[in-house]
Length: 104
Image (cartoon, rainbow, N blue to C red):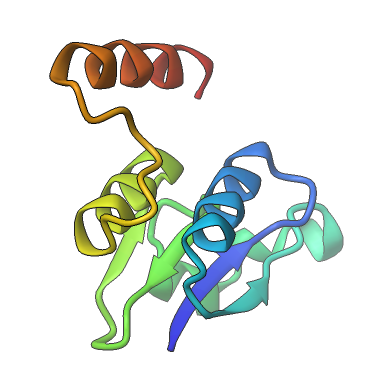
């Protein structure tokens, strides 16, 4: 099962959770509290998962880790193309991604 390392108040983590939910993909949430005890993202256990120390991080079933919400969403869109999160037309998709990159 996929594991999403996430902080409940992180907008970037929220984007990844929304994508997983809209696509109906089961996953396990691993909470990473960004303020408790100096930030759990700075602990060696999480740095072993994501050396950047940022959330979200999506761990695949084979142990591979994808970081950054838009990279996670792009991966999910490629591997699970339905339902579509991005427009199908190339220009519309590029415009949607341009907006997403701006607000990310």
